[in-house]
Length: 258
Image 1 (cartoon, rainbow, N blue to C red):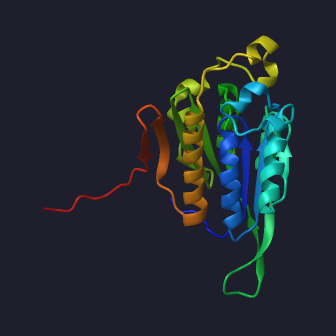
Image 2: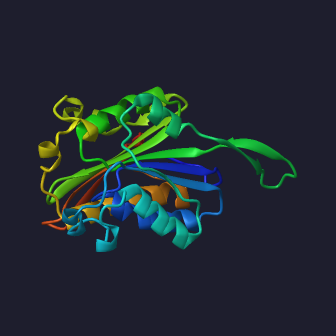
């Protein structure tokens, strides 16, 4: 699938923990290299704790600080980009819709002396650790006319990254909930609905799995924004076997007559 290499870009990332924390620095660098207007909004209501320092992209100096703010201020300042973050969890459909609403920017057309209003290319990154947030993203994805939704999820050694694409009100690549229907089963809660005891328990993950998932996400976005094309719909990986397997877009090719 082809994507514009001139449209302004807005990326909204839900989650700034194990995977989101490793996505952020590379994504800021990528956006810095693009010759067009860019925005990157990081959303997370969690704060940095001692246990996060083992596998997440934080330091002891960040303890007690909001994760989204730490990442946004650290890397936007380094690359001279505007600092944008939401220090809370996104758990409401209207709020997510508002975040994903594209702005129209006045841009000059190549080879012409006039400018036109151009909508942002919006990308939603799901770097969350619960399926209820994925269900919210799934619903909103199908309600949008145009959206790129990249979701990453992993356990201790394995994981997957799925890229969903909507364009002109039509789904070209299905989102995580259509690829893995079990994600849509009501089995967990939003982060703000968890008790203190529940919040302290999480599925085991490893630094390697988080970094591998983050790399796959950045690879997908690089292809979309820097090369203008992407054929990868899904990636699965195992850090134990050091194996990454992509699932490519299916193409219809006519067989040549004998």
